[in-house]
Length: 197
Image 1: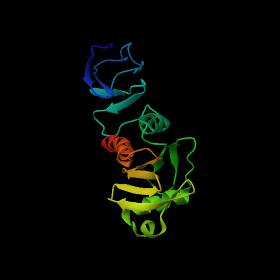
Image 2: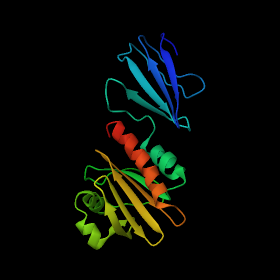
Image 3: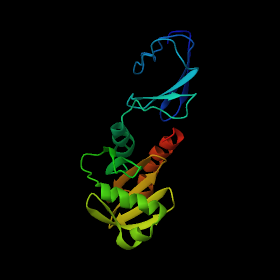
Image 4: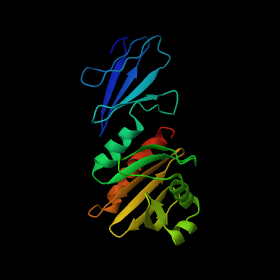
């Protein structure tokens, strides 16, 4: 770290590094990825979250919205599929356009499927009678609590959680405890909510 900043580490599943800086050119220590911030620094504190795979997130303490340096695809690969509790996963725009921000390779979700899934959060009546389709496969609607939707088809199932701007979706397969898949989805959704998404 240059420019007289201080580095604070907190032991967590991920490593948070707070950088307080008054000058220019800040870098993370050599033990992690290098991030350069050049020019006069217009912030008092930045927080860098370094995931176990050394991917970086950047958060501005003066702005509650976090700018992801880790790609949306890495969220799916690392925290959904990488949890071992989700067979497939996606992060989708909750804005109603059905835009897929990231997905696992085998998961195909249509805009119509996204629209109907989003409706199940606020009005589960149609989902309760017609089921929920994801990737062309029909799941029996189990319940919705406003922030999450649960559905299953035999030994497989789905968990979807909505944030302000995103829909975090995961499918689980036989042998997975549904609650463990829900925990993995919930961690991603909670993280996104905490950072303005």
